[in-house]
Image (cartoon, rainbow, N blue to C red; front, side, top):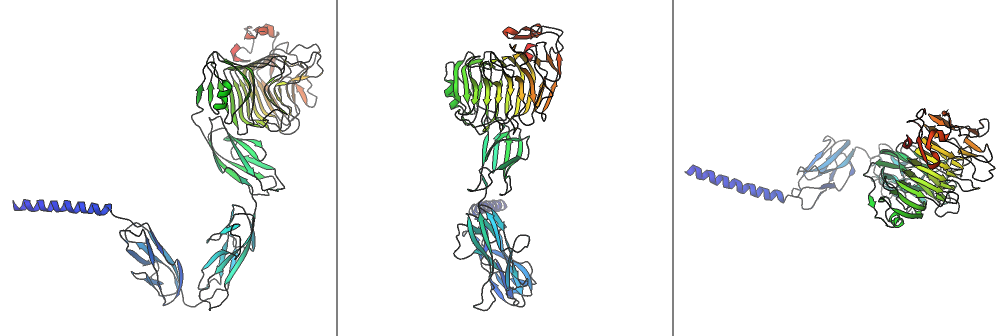
Length: 631
């Protein structure tokens, strides 16, 4: 019975001790830092140095320290931080916290036998080469080094400083010798030796370096993240110093498959092409300033938000209020769409595929878009002002408001585009750049019909313009006069670097619009610019416009430096175009074309009324050539 009582008392005591210990743990304050009052020092053999340590925080629970010497033959240290030098050499005197937190600090101690005074200081660059004057750009850094002479000087301690009276707003120098330019100007940096053992009144030993802080080129983004599925892009601007003689900049990308660059002088538009990472670099053409970089990451996001409009809604207001979003139009939607400005962030107008929305008097302007926006039209009918009247869907010409544009994409998907008497896309000023122009699964009819005018479905007449990628696929072009495409911008940067026409049906196309035509018009005119790659595949050349004056319907005009590829194409007997392969620039027919035995009426069901269903079962291109909707 007594034994049991003793055990119970023991257990109660143990519980009490445990609770008390827990309370102590809860109140425990660990050490968060240790510092010493001296970081480096020189002693002679037999001298002593008292070190003092500070422990943070002041209310640390365990403030005890462990003092040690890394080389006890050179110097010893007692439990209070008193150091005694023993022999010539170097050691570290450590003060470490005893609470197990790992905090500690050390003083580098040099023990010398004889006093060797400092005789000089040498400032050098990081390669050890002497420097007396350097230039550093604003915001840039230049590391300096300093050496104490002689090499066996007793006291090697020195400091970096600016000369008295220097403008501290011009530059800064760290105690590790790194000079940083702050503003344009000049200042002098000194490395000053302490020379502690020199006789009283001796001169300070130092060396100096004149630092010129110069203007630099800057870039407004050093890193950038882009969403591949977003409708917007990003504009990056480099700024050159005022008065710079050379303002020509060269922009390059480390990975053209990840990002594209739309040029615009001191600014470029960066457009995402695939997920991944790339580095954008800008440099002056004469290398007068150091190049700058921006790290670009392209990710694949969820895509734009969709906003659905009701019948009768104000489409113009919806476009202005929903930049970067998909605007979904309900079946039966119809609205005027003239003079609409594309907002920053891009736009995507999408109708019902089975009941296209009708946008009448349709015409837009880019509103100065320069950030690589995407502009898409899908499942809509765009109706202009009349086949023989004026009018454009896009006219960014001289005198048109908000000419500047850098677009990532201008595309038409499953659209019917009709009654534009001049051009669907016309750009003719120097600050236009569209990375991709695309017509897919579209019907384009009754366009470029205004008499005595000179236009094309896609028209670019400015030498420095560039459309790197033009794609016309799975579409029908019916009664389109003048030219399908004019990218003859003159000498300079190619207007259409890569052109693809694939699975397209053409009928009643090509020819001067005037009643008394006086000049040849071409199916594609790319004859007056730099190298262009044009590919025409699996298409049907159904007929050309019958003119009162023959031989004024040209084929494809190309410069000799261009590349023209054709395969799987077919032409009816009324595809009659003028060719002049020997001319400069040359004029040739669509290559890779197999003649069909009859005219367009023999091949198509009812071409005069827009029905291009293949009715000749023996046609070699059936199921392979032309717009797939007619197979």
